Image 1: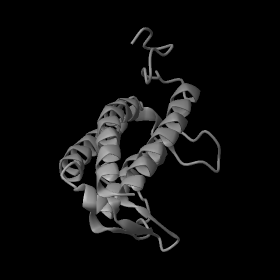
Image 2: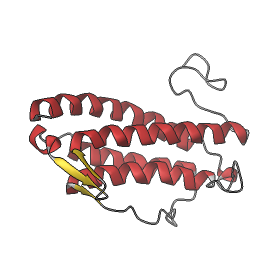
Image 3: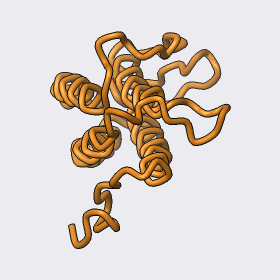
Image 4: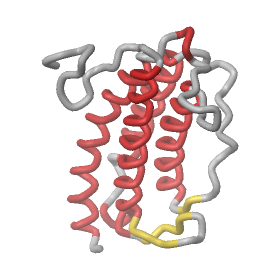
Length: 167
């Protein structure tokens, strides 16, 4: 991939990520305070653990792109100060805004450069933006299923939902 192609793809992905971040924050904030420990299955993460997985891994992807190499993510434990979905959404929004400003300044030359992903494969940095976006969207859908199963309201995501029709 050449720098011009990387820059063009990055601009498209930055636009998508900015849009998707608003939806992600809204969906995570919909977690009722009294349902943070809800599990859809005994082997599954709690709702708050899943929310943390979504937002912390997106942050990890961006941080790794900034470093130019991907290392193993941290243990994934929810920080003590994150007690609710609203706390998680606020943390995510703050991190996303900070990282987005930094990411949108990355050059096409930088984003075209291959980066090692856990020493398993090397792709141009811009490809990891798509991986971050896909990871977030995938698990956000899983999180929406948690919301429905626990009896919470599911916000509109790509159009209306039963709880937010016509959005």
